[in-house]
Length: 189
Image (cartoon, rainbow, N blue to C red; front, side):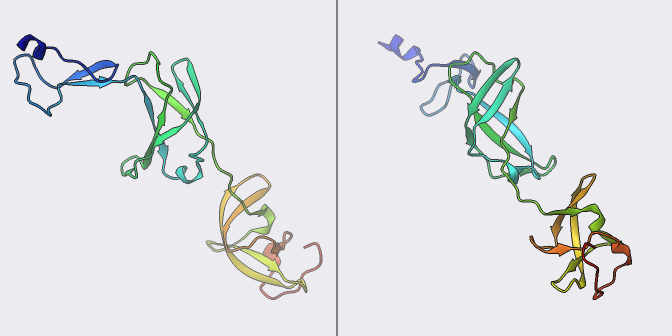
């Protein structure tokens, strides 16, 4: 009868990945003896803090582990913590069950990014006044009004406006270095 108490049975199928007791230790109720990997894996992806808001975390994620690709993996967990050293946030992606993987393997993930509305103007519309960046907003009478702006990403022909300009406003695009606040412009300026 006491021999039955020497057999350890797991309530789940899986692989023993660590042992928390040594031979000869006394096993007490409630104390874990072994850690079982149920062969349900998660990839922990480190996402830069600045990129995190753009991710569509409801969309399926594509994961690569070695030469194996897993498509349509769901996001399983997002701990509400940002690593203060690397400025990254962990996103845990659930992988399909029944895989012959080993814990600790390297993998990569590709997340879908949401769409972001962007306001940009021709590069020639932005002028420098000292260290300030400005545009001249034209009213209905073609009078130029100086407006401070904060710029973002610049391309070869256009520059992103992050603040200081509203969609639909008309800006002067030619000879802005010769304009002043309150001056009348010619159509097409």
